[in-house]
Amino acid sequence: MTDRKPEAGSYLVTPRTTLHRRKPRGAYDRATVHAILDEALVCHLGFAEGDQPFVLPTTFVRDGESLFVHGAAGGRFLRTIAAGVPVCVTVTLLDGLVLARSAFHHSMNYRSVVVLGVAREVTDREPKLHAMRCLVDKISPGRSSQARAPNEQELAATSILAIPLEEVSAKIRSGPPLGEENDMGRAIWAGVVPVHRAAGAPVPHEPLTAPYEEPVLPPGLRRPL
Image 1 (cartoon, rainbow, N blue to C red):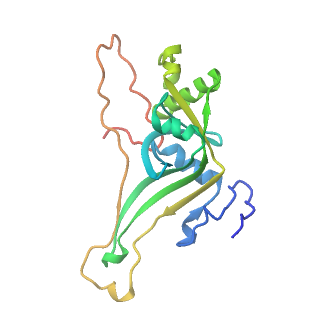
Image 2 (cartoon, one colour):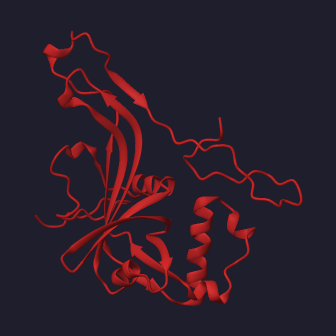
């Protein structure tokens, strides 16, 4: 199979990003991919070092057509990835538990993205500071304008990697459970249990010398109940 020419506003479909099962669940348009990446707070970063594969959770942020991840300068996993090792980034948002009338058809509703590529290290000062601001604002929008910026020592202690959004696909499942016709009369509850991401009440770190507004929550995270 060869690469398929992308539709306007979509990513190039490659043999590695083509869905072979449940093809209607696949999506390659930028709007869908960006929305999932912007809502997710954690990604899993996969790579191989020699014969040993690693999959590590980390914070990330999308900036245009790049993903930024960060870690300690000189750390093994960032050092390995920065050397040009191919990586696989995955993100999943769980939207519901799908309970069917048969064990086989139990599932989950989700939105996911897979990114394949090679990372590059961001070393120039201003682009590196920009990436760090983006990472802080992902946690709490607008926070980077309030918090102290990294000093030179902190900047030197942090590595930033940029992963291009070039070979990308999304996969989405939504809706009710599937089922066989002869199971429809079975005496068991079937349907979807929605799953939502909610934040607890903010816990202040003393001392706070004046009353402050509560921090802004990132998209997709509900206010405290």
